[in-house]
Length: 538
Image (cartoon, rainbow, N blue to C red; front, top):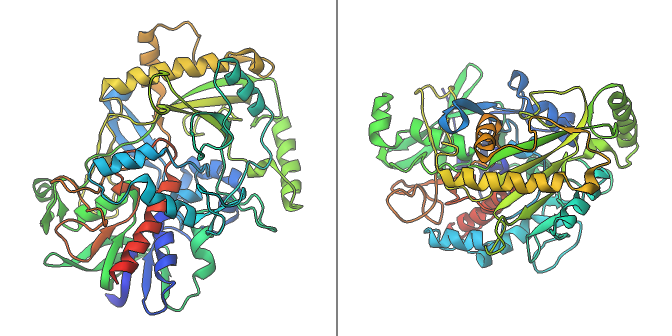
């Protein structure tokens, strides 16, 4: 068994892990090792935004862990699909690149939930530090950070029809979902390069932070390497065991081990290392190092329901002869450096809306997609069309991540317990009806041929059954190593694992509760703030 030593060992090269590896290794006096199970995330389908559709299907396990949940009673016993990125950059290598941050109240709520130091006022500087926004710098945005944030390069005209439809339903336009007010309809900004020569390429966390510094002498990046266990001496973390093909080894950590595997893999690795609910670990034959019952609890995710429409407009994405011609043209434009549909985020626009005007902040989010996206692109339809997603932004349902096996190569046991709280279903019904009102408005009539699945005159009971038969994640799992100060908190507000020395968790799993939006930007913020904390500790 080989063995090396570094000051900091980071297990997981996703969005947070890339930020940490880059920021910590800025100090030449420390050494950093990053362990990532996937590839370097430089291939053409990662760099080209439309390539995400290929990886989303989870074929052959390439760039996508393609996890499944346990059967969900709230989804009529179906197993949910949980695609997660398997490359440097993690899910930022395969996501829709949408850059949203939620609202200030989301972070102030974290403080109320025990995360002292994570109020909106305290996290905003780290959002700005990360950001290189094409709109330049202001009080809410940064322009000097590594993460390039761009406008939609060549959005389809259907987006403007969507805006007009929403406005006809008395919803207003919003030019910046990350501005002073989130409410309204508009275009999403995206994590795409806007620098000359790379315009429109995906700016994953790896592309933003890591790829350009991987030659630092104090940074070792081990790809194709699976972290299998945190090495413990008593209740002190001293390193990480790994598997690389048939080879096993240990990387020792002189200062800290940092887990950045995300909401599924970080709690899994803690449990495999003997840190978690003692009774559950003993049932799997794992020696208990530290009884920490909150590990894997508090799983939250945005459940998503999609309304799909066929269209006669062949400039929309679809399957057919016109689509093939459009793609060839797009490839030629892309190679010439011109705007191209290859740079699309698919979800080019959307909305944050209130189902009740009396509430303080939007409670549902819409993603308007210029294609018929059905079952995570795994169910294809011949022809052309579009779709609109709706999700409940702050769900009440709580799930768990656990172990089916003590084998570190086995997937984690994922149980989101979708719709286990009836309030989520009631709100999703309201959101679905509101969305359908917009989609049936006259400005979208030129695109609309017919709706798939729904008739339009369903009773609430029928609509609930339909949601249970088709709804699934929109890829925002958080909370399974939540920070706080109570007995079920896994990490403290400094992101240190409670009761264990030299061990932190830095990723979306530490969020006490879901923010009202897409979670990649907040995950990067968490890692920026954590890097500052770790530097201060040094």
